[in-house]
Amino acid sequence: MTGKILVSACLLGHKVRYDNGDVPCLDARFLKWYEEGRFVHICPEVVGGLPTPRPDAQRQGDRVVTGAGVDVTEPFMKGAQATLKLAREHQVALAILKQDSPSCGSLYIYDGTFKDTKAPGEGTTTELLRKNGFKVFGEDQLDEVEQELARTDGQGIL
Image 1 (cartoon, rainbow, N blue to C red):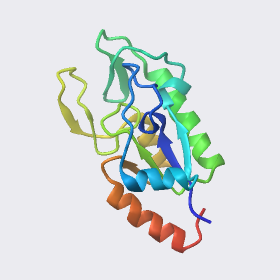
Image 2: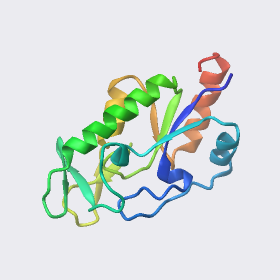
Image 3: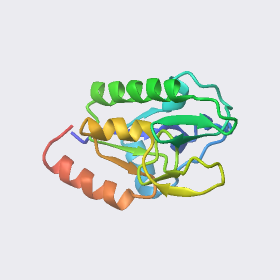
Image 4: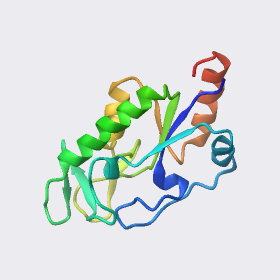
C-alpha cells in the first residue's frame, strides 16, 4: 500500500486562504498522488477557528499576529494540534504544506514585519509536525517528496 500525504487544503483549490483565494498545485506528480487517493487535507487556520477571509498574519517569534497587532497565536496553535491529530489518525508518510504560510511554511515564512519580506523559518503547524517526527515539505519541494515516497513506499510504510 502507498503512503498517505497530508496536504494544505489551499493546494487542492479549496478557498481557505486568508484572502479567500487558493493556490492549486498543478504539478503532474501532485495530481497523480491526488488521483491515487493519497491525500488527507486540512487548513490548520480554518480548523483552528479563523474565518475566511481573515486578516493577514505573520509569526513574530512564538506568537502569530495580524498586521493590526492582534494576537492570533491561540487559533494557530489549535489548528496545529488538530493537524497533528489528523496526521496521526491517518498515519501519513509525510506532509506537503503551503510554503511561506505562518502555519504551513517549511523553509521560509514572512518575517513578521508585514513588509512582504521572507526569512528562513517554519510555520506553527510545520514546527509541531516536525517535533513529532513527521517530514514536511513545501509545494516547491516535490522532487524531495518523490524521493521520500519512493523510500517509504519501498519499505511498506503506510
